[in-house]
Image (cartoon, rainbow, N blue to C red; front, top):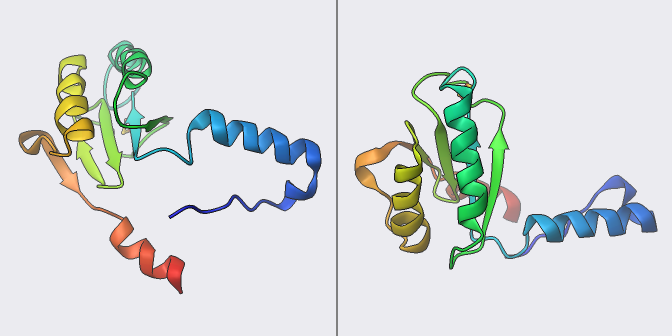
Length: 135
Ligand code: FES
């Protein structure tokens, strides 16, 4: 299902094109997964988190599955990071390393099988939002 972007300033040709460009650059319409990272500073050492983020930026470009990635400021867990949350499944992975990310990208993102032994929490939000969107 595709949702069109509706914003207050969409009737401005300049802002509309600017938003369209950003939406395209972000890969919103083609994305099959969205990866959210918390890279510290409270849940992990900032340099560990930043290293993971830099690795993720390079690595997701080569995936067979179109993926969006977002650096979140804080998930309010503030321990046990860096954190990765994968949507639409709503699967939370903690203690992320490059090695863990690599396996998650291959097994979960491309293969569709979450790395169960590393899943800390799971909440697929889509099961609730679909009904709300269709109302
Ligand atoms: S700083 Fe990562 S969860 Fe709060």
